[in-house]
Length: 231
Image (cartoon, rainbow, N blue to C red; front, side, top):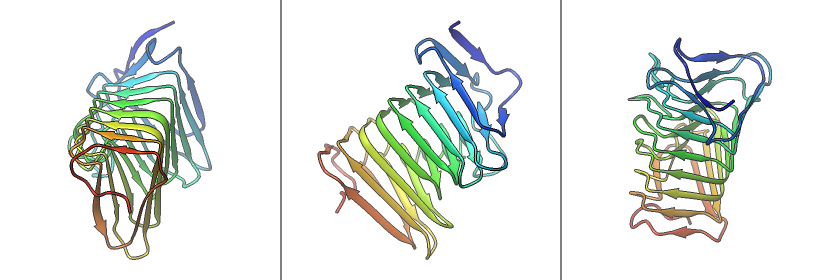
């Protein structure tokens, strides 16, 4: 059965592997009603969290810790934990001054495939990856107005790795923000077959105390007037 499920008693905390199989992003929505985050993920051991064919909407990533964030999904977890988002839409999330308007991931890995991250705002980075791995494929990031980019890849204590393949990054405040903030940290960003258009900047470098690598792997279109081009 389709429709919208609105959370009325706050965020859902999930500590074991989970698969949510929807009916299609246009048919079934889980909503935070603009008042709460949708999911907090992470527990002991290596867990896998799958979100398939669903819309996650209207989350509010409020929290007392500056790293809390994540209107749709927040995970501060084991480095082996994985989030997979397939054929889904994340829209209309916010997080005020926290990190990750839609997704806040500290450690672990994130895969987004055949999906759309749209019209999210506030906070620092619509998708926030700290010391984490992110792979975004065949997807659209559009209309997001968070500071520090539609995606912020940040290494603080280890490494952050972001790969974009066949991705449209359009009409955001900034496209990709990337930083490496301690001497032994490293942030790597790669992109190919992707389009950057209508953003204030395609790429923006933040802290560079550690090692930064930004690489075009070819067949990209960058039409933004400003930004830091890949070497």
